[in-house]
Structures are given as structure tokens and as C-alpha cells.
Length: 177
Image (tube, rainbow, N blue to C red; front, side):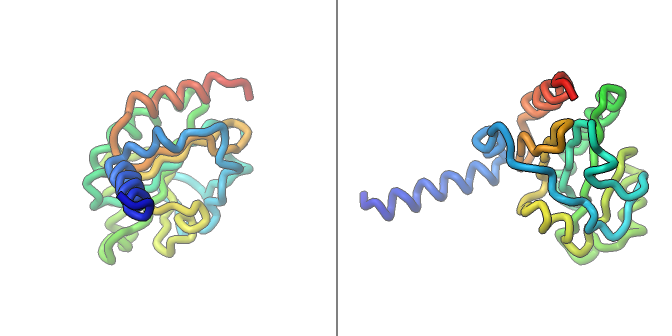
């Protein structure tokens, strides 16, 4: 097998892992740098606008999702549960709704979906992809875990590894602010 073929095969495996949500394990490192801005959201549901100053000292889970994504639908119950279970310990979940399809741009329908899905945490309406682009995101769902100092510490793409993601939350909450 030539080197070019091996690289192509390795690249295919990496893309498959991302697609299956397994790349979150491969992408863990001490820090990805400071939390990018949330300020590009056109509107907020369940909250006034949030950004780094309002979230200082909190552990933050930023969840990029869209209402008609099957993988998002499967991960959402876990995100909802983490938001409820760890809120009193300093976790703030921020949903960033970035639509995949044209019909998902309807903010009225989004508000209905947020209510019907039991989402009580802040949701940034990202119809123009401003937050998506600021974060350099490319996947639904995508979970970014931010520590109390505002550093992105862990990333998980796709569904799955909920126990591992919850462990990241617990570790970040256990760190001194």
C-alpha cells in the first residue's frame, strides 16, 4: 500500500470516528484556549444574552444543536438532566440552536420546541451562524466544556459517551475557581 493510500485510509477512519461521535475521546487535551464569544446570537430564549463576563466562575457546557437532528434528539435528555442535576454546583448549560434546514430558522417554532422538549436553560438563537463560526464548529450535536477560568477544556462531537461527558462535568465542577 502506498503512503498516499495509507493517509487516505487514516483520514477516512478519522472522519468515521467524528461521525460516530467517538472523536471526543481523541480530542481531549488540557485546553483548547479561551471560550469563544456567544455575542453573535440574534436572540435568546430563557435568558438575557450571555457571554464570558456573565459566565465567569461557572463551569459551562455549550451544546450546539438543532431541533430536527436525530443525534441531537438522542443527546438532549442527557443535556437536560445535567443542567438540572448540576445547576446548584455551578454548571451553566447554554444551548446554541444553529439550524441545519431552512424551516428551522422559524424562531416561533423554535420557542415551541424548546418548551415542548423541557429545555429550561438559556438557548442562543444562531440563525446567522455567527456563534457557530466564532466557535469554529462543524457538527450537531457538539458539546464544549468550559472551566471556571473560561478555558475550553473538553470537546465531544456527536451522541454517546454520556458517562464520560458527565465525568468531565464533575471534574470541572470539582476544580477550585
